[in-house]
Length: 278
Image (cartoon, one colour):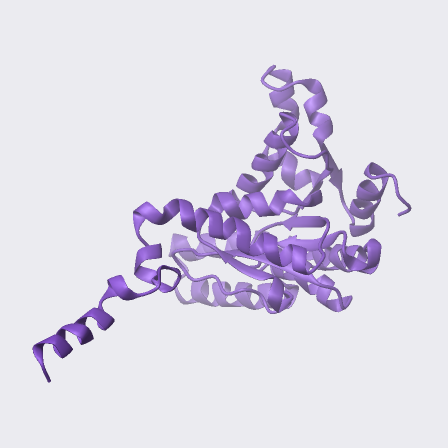
């Protein structure tokens, strides 16, 4: 093989010769972040258009609140660990924490039932009020599962995390997306939202809730109802009335939030807000 032929092979093998659109190493560079942001905006957007999704109902909640049977097994395991080492404070703490999660097991069934109601009564041939979740386990799984029960489409907007989060198995496959950027994921949660339903959750749920309620407060997004499921839980987590009493929010900002205790009550709040038959 001649020197020129060797050089030609090197040219063809060089990363510089790879088409830019197929160059994963190029796309991963720091300088290409604006391009990656644009791709994360466009990929779901194009898919929503292709599937004629006009509006959505977004459901947030903890990844840790699962089915009762699953939580009971988790509690049995925690109690067995404590029995094996009764003086271990961490084991005792785990039992107490798991008991509190189990006490919220009804939220899983409520999210599933609410999503089934929404998907059964979805407007305009299923193009409106499509259920959207973060695509993970727990309350998100319950919500996608309710749509699955009804034979309806639902969306999962998953996120890459330090510990891999596998999508739950009830999302419509062609409507399950994986994000790197939280900001773009939250944007897609709200772009088509006609309601936001917030089940008990932790930091992630609070982050998503406060993002939405701040945009509503500042009139930077469409008017939608924000429904908190479980008044007792949420009023322990955030003292909304205290914020108004302290003058750091207006009294009318409290009206941006509604509370519900049943799936039917959530649906009625949404139906009344948008003035259509429940």
